Length: 187
Image 1 (cartoon, rainbow, N blue to C red):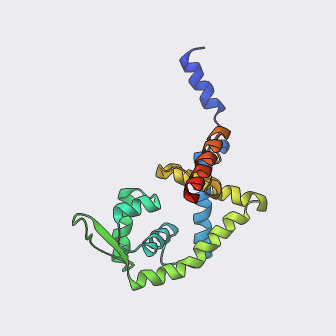
Image 2: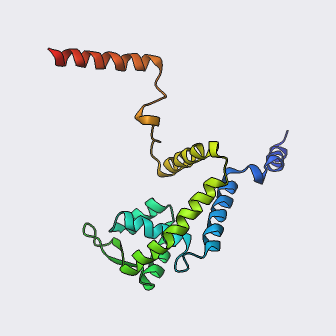
Image 3: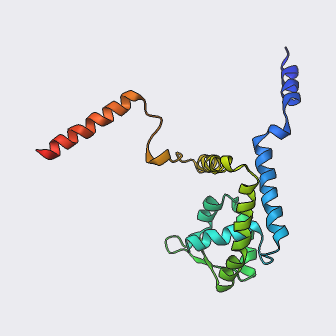
């Protein structure tokens, strides 16, 4: 089979309805539509409310830290912060550790906007989860957390703090080390 036919087969076998990237994008659009339709947070968009929430969690984050926290690309976030600053929702000042970096802070108006947006954000979360069967909700959140960890380039958290991937041999070695430590501490 030629390379051209192989590529053609790949394209013809691709189904948008089975594409994780497309499905995630449509899910994000669904969340945005729910948020907008609620009309509870006329002052800020869903993405702006996410930025406000990130700043509220840790005042003084740099714009680079906000890029990492929110996942919004650098240029889009810079534009958003500039617009939010003009609206009086955030303020920026030179970072203490790096004069080139800007630290972002909520203003009183930003806190009010976040307080007004919070019910809408919570309603969106509930609506997304309620769109799923009850028995799928925890695994959905766990899957999203795994994707988030992958995006952050960090090892995903282990269930209950234990490493489920250890082989039996590794577990035995671990038990031996623990028991020998206990014996030494008794002496």
